[in-house]
Image 1 (cartoon, rainbow, N blue to C red):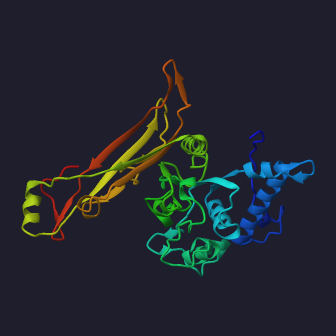
Image 2: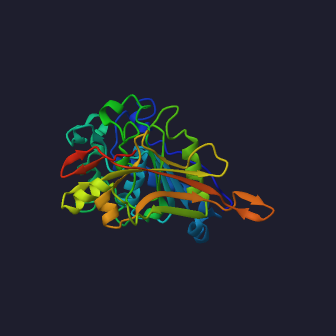
Image 3: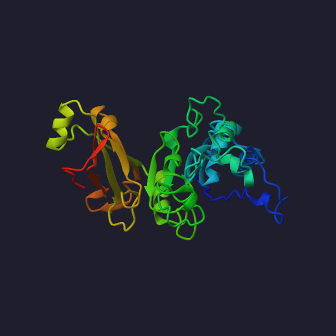
Length: 337
């Protein structure tokens, strides 16, 4: 389109006594404000000779980019205030608690905790503003209101660099949002070793920017799965299994995705950074269920040579063997990292 622009929705300004009333609106109010902004932009860009032009309206589209609670405001817009708004083409969220916020050893944020609207991250309240009354539908679902393939979830894994909340949230998180809660169901997603916020957080990261620009403007999508046909067991463990003993074997899978020549990673899940993929022997191997490794967006316009446009990427894959449990007891023999 001839007109392209970046607009910032400063939804938090009403909370300030200098810029607003000092009162804290509800999520639904923020979503209504976002809709009004999109309405105003449509009027601005689609008015011709003093009236809205249907042809310009037909081509009018916006991309939504949101961090943390901003992603829930986008979902409230698309699932409740203006369900499936056709003017929204794609959505990209950084570190959004799509499944709520869980406190260490306590579970979901309590419904009665209403300090600074903390109940917005409680499942009961989330189901209200996301219009998900059916409890069989997970709270991180778009509820059929927006296509999940048009929604990207960027997930941070560095909990150590976010001192404000890491003691309350723990590992397998970005310091505030656990990685199990940081994505929309069935959406493409990427993991990056960044914290929830701060100078070196996920929003300011090169990894975040590179994922965003490829998701919005790329023309190639790669979905990588690990299809496990068989994993052999150590001889002693195999004999006990044949004797009828229950064998439990959890594996850890590391995966790093890069593009050619980059010094940053598009996707990164490792054991040392406490973000590796957990693979259970019974769930994935015995049941023949593939393990999703990564969703990576690319563009074949990125590199042009004498041979024409080319595309290059790499996936590093490592699998750590488990410490076996046999009949509920640890089996320390024949163990290999």
